[in-house]
Amino acid sequence: MGVMAYTAWGLLPLFLKLLQPLPPVDILSHRILWSLLLLGILAALLRRGAALGRVVRSPRLLATLVGSATLIGINWLIYVEAVNSGHVLQASLGYFINPLVNVLLGVVILRERLGRVEIVAVALAAIGVATLAIWQHALPHVSLALALTFGLYGLVRKMAPVDSLEGLLVETALLSPLALAWLLSPAGAGLPAAGPSMALLASSGVVTAVPMLMFASAAKRIRYADLGLLQYIAPTLQLFCAVVLFGEPLLPIHLVAFAFIWTALVIYGVATWRRAAQAMPMMPE
Image (tube, rainbow, N blue to C red):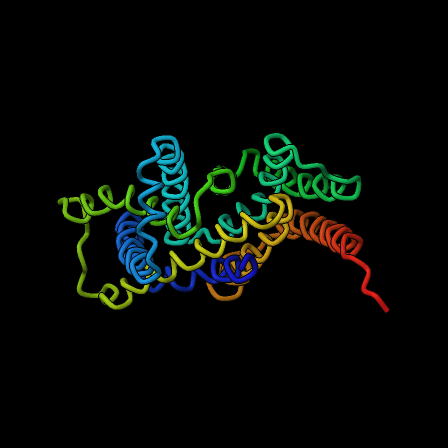
C-alpha cells in the first residue's frame, strides 16, 4: 500500500497539468469535494456508519482530525501551486526532504531508535539538502513547507486511533465547507470554456482519496522511519516528470544534492532490509 500510494503521488503532476487553466485554489476545492463524495459512498457501501459515529462523538479525536485536515489542506494547496507555476522540481525536493522530517519526528516524538548505519544515511541526506540551500543562499521555502506539512500530517494520523477511511472522510468533510464556499464565491473561477471537463474534475476525487487511504493504512502498519524510506519513490518520479516531460532545468548543483540523497537512500534501504531479514523466524527444515 505504501509503494502504490507513493507511486501515485509521484505521477500526480501529470494529472494536475490536465486541470489547467483552473487556479490552484479551485483545483484544491474540487479535489476536496469530489473526494468527500467518493469517501462517503465507500463508507456507506462498507457500512462504516457506526465507526464514523464514534469518531464524530469523540471531541478529542475530532480535534486531532481538525489539525490533520489543516495540515493536509495546506500541503495540497502548496503542491498544486508548485505544479501550476512550473516548479515541480522544487516540489520533488520537498518530498526528498520529507524522509528527514519523518525520521526526526519518529526519533524525537515516537522514540524510535536508529542504528549507526541509519544515522549515517540520514546525515548524508541532510548534507544534500544543505548543499542546495547554501548554493541558493536561502532555504528552499516551498520544499521545506511541503516536507514539514506532510511529515506532521503523517505523524498525527499515525497517532490518531482512527481507521484510514473514517479519518480521511472526516478530514475532507471538515475542509469541504471552505472548498464549497470558495467555488460559490465571486473569487472562484468557475469552469472556463477551455478548462477541464466535469468528468476529469470528478476523477480528481479518486486521484486524491485512493492514495491517501493507502498511505494512512501503511502508516499504521510500519515504522514511521521506514515509511520515510518508501517516500523516495514519489519525488524520484516527480523529478523525472519535471526534467524529462516538463522541461524544467536540472542544474549541476541539483545533481550533487540528489547524489547525497540517493546514496543515503541506498544505505538506509540496505540497513532496513538486513534488519527485516534478521527478524524473520527460521523456517524448519
